[in-house]
Image 1 (cartoon, protein in one colour):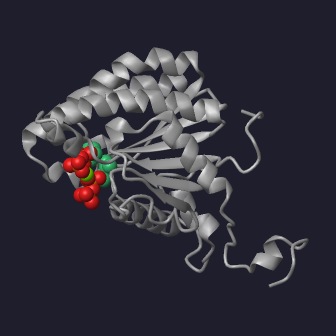
Image 2 (tube, helix red, strand yellow):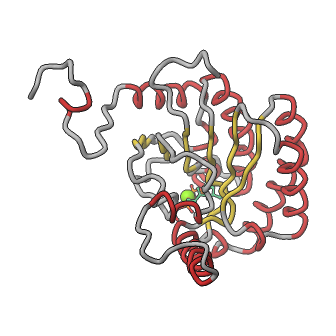
Length: 248
Ligand code: IPE
Ligand code: IPE
Ligand code: MG
């Protein structure tokens, strides 16, 4: 991890999109695309570790994805359970902590059981973190955070006049995670689809036309390289960020 080159993003978040189109282009059912997508997930978890990325967040199921046909939702849940069953040993071997964000209590019991098992088995690892966004939506996250914050105010644990983001953000699902530095979306869509709206306030974005089942470690490496060439200014001027460079 410490051998990662300077400018490597600490936290990369990926909107894994394009499974359905990948399958349709081949005359296959959409679920085949999701199956291939799981293979990509495996490869990219490995690649992220090798590239020195500490935290990898994968948008696996949005709060809006329940609106898909029931057989597709069922198949996605089945794949998730299968992935967790098969992948836990590898996560332990590679010392990767699994975390989730989203309303996971609304997932089917079988998926929840596997999640709890894997999260508990990997909770002590500190080297790298895999975050699965499951039944995640940024708007429901804000509602959940506001509710928890209001309860804390009512209990006298927080002050209503405290307007610091550091305080409020402790009530988001991501309270123990750093903000994403780089957000990647595959499949050519250039929208955020209710993903990490607060946390990505200053993230760099990379959009690639590659469909998720075709996304490779080389594509991830290319996104990381593009990120390394960006100048993040956080509202400041370029000269402030680089005092040594020629003033513009
Ligand atoms: C991403 O692929 C996977 C999920 C959203 C669960 P899609 O299923 O959205 O694929 P497209 O966008 O229809 O091609
Ligand atoms: C976003 O993809 C959600 C996930 C990748 C899990 P969608 O395919 O659901 O997004 P929209 O509907 O095209 O915006
Ligand atoms: Mg899609």
